[in-house]
Image (cartoon, rainbow, N blue to C red; front, side, top):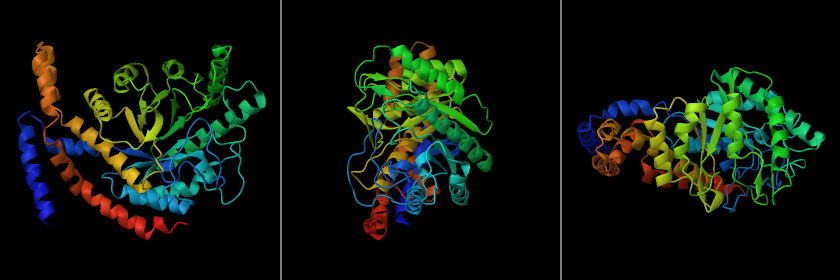
Length: 419
């Protein structure tokens, strides 16, 4: 009770502080209800999936760590996701890779997957108030190699074309069932360790593959195409580079996915938002945290994340920017990793909503650049954290520090017993 009273008291003071800048905090809390994150299923089990246990992760990606308690079955993964979601305010989505299908212990190759393999996921999501997004899975397969959709070998390329077509059909069925478009993300690792003799050759093949994949039109799913800077073992050349997908997306009206870990560390992903909004229909974000390389560290509330959130809000683009998470850390409690990353993303968005943007734009229009910079600095220490605590309490989720003991309890009672 004392904790609740202190949160309410701090919130009242915060609303008064923001009112000085003409900011209605209650309105911003209503706007936060529109923010639905897409939680990534692969944080719970280190990108293993359910095709077979113990398979090697390939395709230039890597999971480090062996913290005990990894989800090993669909039921365990669903329990972990549900538990993590209980500490994240609001209603959110779950992003599935194709390898997480309910295959019933049967061997189903990637070019044979059907909507029926995700019927139980659709039912589970409906029962738990979540909606689903989807991804094709072109890595960790005997036919992955270094090239999939850009492979000159017709048999291999056609295998992956068929796989991706089926994933789009599954996404359509998911969208129909949930009454909301399913975001279908296409990412391939294709590349080479050294620079190829002809870069254009493989990109032309990829373009042709994409054209064939996207030939069928659907109305209950949305296509997203995701670039990457490089993969481990494929450092010198990436077929599906950002330039490639940006050009393809702008030309063909596809959504370009910006993974915050898929760019050079000195690049600003936030700076790309306004440009893409002009030339592509929508944007898909995969929020991650790179350290030196695309190492998919747990998202934290750092300057990059705050800048990204501010750009979305300043562009008034919440209805055109879809926000998903994409990291996989096996060195710490996996449910804790979910909660830290999702809550950090929400904090960044809330802090951005509470920025005195109207006054900042006024200063800029009047050429008052000292005043603009001074207010930008002042805004960093406005009491948005008091608003955050109230947001959590009003959504029946604990404040940050109380999540620790709750997740420790779940580990003691559930995940620690997974031997």
